[in-house]
Every structure is written in structure tokens, then in C-alpha cells.
Image 1 (tube, rainbow, N blue to C red):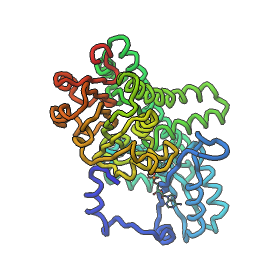
Image 2 (cartoon, rainbow, N blue to C red):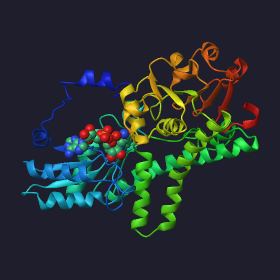
Image 3 (cartoon, rainbow, N blue to C red):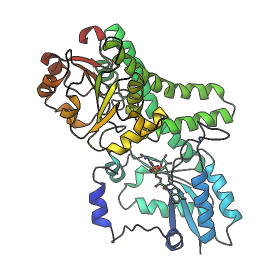
Image 4 (cartoon, helix red, strand yellow):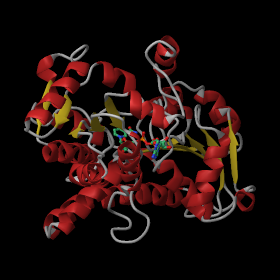
Length: 416
Ligand SMILES: NC(=O)c1ccc[n+]([C@@H]2O[C@H](COP(=O)([O-])OP(=O)(O)OC[C@H]3O[C@@H](n4cnc5c(N)ncnc54)[C@H](O)[C@@H]3O)[C@@H](O)[C@H]2O)c1
């Protein structure tokens, strides 16, 4: 797992106030507060498949805590959960309590991968949801005191349980919505002659809108945005609010459309065929400074290119070759041997570009802005194309070197 700053923290604290152990029972018995941080993926089976959260790991934790607890416990929902999950947890725990008292709090995590340590050290806010009963208030105060050792009090907000659970889903939905909003405008810019970066800058200076999350790209990925929006959509459907469900589902649909649109642009520009052409894909992680590939747009890009019979060479500074090959095979629904002659992974971006017809930037790793593009251009097939899905390459410099550059949200006529 790669996360800037994490290794240093683990090295500094391990054995002092940070311990790792597979002995879950001992951990539960010794703890006063238990953070449940297990995964809550989208259900792939049964009722709600494809949208609802799979809560089996959460329930297993609750049952295990109830089974082995030897005293009262505060149980903190750290995982992102649909509204009213705390209610189900309470029922499971109280039905198996054996005389102990379990207080449930919701304390959703707002950190982002790639900036996790910075976000934890200096959060915009910490949210704690709990019951307003005397034991609920006591538990909230205890958890608050944990954070208060490094987070200013005015940044620690408390709400009821449901508000806290819902706030996390809504925060992710709003963030993803901004990405889909600017991506939808990127398509309009391409055909009208506007430049999406200029539009983003102009609207972002409006303090009501703000500058963050306005970068047009090949789409959002990661383990959370899509999962959490689909969860919200499922909740709305469940509570018979189909208009609200459709509204939020559109954020995911625009994201999928943007990925397809990008691949279509590549194929169309490469004279309507990529069959037999070498295409170097730079970046496989869902964003820079992480090696997480869950829901990464690069998966869809590589899959589509391979389906079009291109020869794909992938480079990523942090993702292991085996992870890349497995993810693409899984997406293609085939085994790794079958795609061997269509897919290569290399640790050297210059190697990746030798004889390539096109470079595709799928992740915004800083190093892709500083590569020796003179060297790369010399080794590529001509015309040499660059498809920048993250708006990070030095556009003008590349054009002056002879590259034909397609950047999302830029007027097409000017580039190609
Ligand atoms: N990744 C993020 O950036 C992020 C940010 C905020 C919130 N979240 C939320 O946090 C939760 C976890 O996300 P993640 O990305 O860390 O997932 P993850 O899949 O990387 O990690 C979850 C871990 O829980 C372990 N686990 C599952 N069941 C268990 C059990 N019964 N006992 C002990 N361990 C168990 C799994 O083995 C896994 O290591 C999710 O609900 C997610 O939505 C994630």
C-alpha cells in the first residue's frame, strides 16, 4: 500500500502506541472504544445488487464484538454506511449483549487517499453522530476528547446518528457531482471552442462555487465515490423518491460516459482504428500518490483499447504489474494468459513509448509533466499522438515538438 507519509508514521509509532495484531478477541476485550473500519462494497448479489451496500462485514464485526466483549464498549462506525445502519448494529449488539452496554457512534472518515495523513492531521471537520441519551452524550464526549488532542474544538461537530451517516454519503455525492459537472462541460467546450480550464478558473473564483474539484478529467475512480452515490440512489429508491434517485444516478452515468467518450476520441483520431497499434498508457492508479486501482478509469480505457485489438503498454510508478494485469483480465472476463500478447507492463515510461502510435495519460502523476518528451517523440511512430486525460502534460511544448495533442475540454480543431 502506498500513501505519502504513512510509512514514517508507522515507523515512528509502531510498538509505542500503535500495534498490529491478528488477535481480534484480545483487541476487543482490551479496548474501551472500537472503531469498525471494514469495507462496505456495493452488493453484487441478491436484493439491491449493483447499488446497495453489502453490510455483511459490518454485521460480522458486531456479532464478534458482542460475543467476546467482557465489559461496556463504545463502538464507532468508521466505515461509510447507509442511513440507519447504526440501528441494525444496535439490535444485533443488544440482542447478544450478555449484560454489557454498547453505545454506537457514527464517525465517518473524510480523508482522501493520496493526502490521507495531511487530511487526518488537519481535517476540515470531524463529525460525530450519537444518541442524545445520557450514555450517548457521555460516549460522544469521550470520542471528542480523543480528537481534541490535535483537532480544534470548533472543528468537531456533533449530530444525531442518522445525520452523521447521511452526511458522509452526501459529501461524496456532492464531490463526485462537481467532477461530473465539469466533465459534462468539457464536452461542450470541445465543440464550441471554449477552454474548460479557463471556464473552471472563471467560475471557481466565485466564492459561492470555489476552485476545488473543477478539473476536467477522464473521470473519477476509487473505492468510494461510485459506491456511495449508488448507495444513496438505492436509499432514495427504497424510500420511494425516484426523482431524487435518478438525479444522483446521473452523476455516475456522466462519469461512465466521459470514459467512453475519451476512448472514442482516441479511436477516431487514430484514423478510426487502433487494431495492431501500440498505445502507451501512462498511469493506472485511480489518482496520483496512491497505488489503489479500485474503479480506476485506466481499467476501462485499457479494456476498451484491448477489445479494439490495440497493443497496450502500461506504466505506473506505484502499481505492481501483477495488479495491472489481473485488473484488466478481470475487466475483460478472460484469463491473464489470453491477453499476454495484447498487454505489457513496464517500469520505464520511455520503454513504453518506443514505437507507440499514441500516449494516453490516465493518471495525473507529477512525473508525467516532466518527462523528456523530445526523447519520447523521437522513438514514437509518426504522427505521434498524446491523449491527455488529466490535463497535465505541457501542451504547448508538446505541440511545438511535433506531437498532436488531445486534451479534454480543449477546442478540438486547435489541436488535431
Ligand atoms: N479508502 C478511502 O479513501 C476511504 C475514505 C473514507 C471512508 N472510507 C470507508 O472506509 C471503509 C473501508 O474502506 P477501505 O478503503 O479502507 O477498505 P479496504 O477494503 O481497503 O479495507 C477494509 C479492511 O477490513 C478488513 N475486514 C473485513 N472484514 C473484517 C472483519 N470482520 N474483521 C476484521 N477485519 C475485516 C478487510 O480485510 C480489509 O483489510 C469503507 O466503508 C469506505 O467507504 C474509505
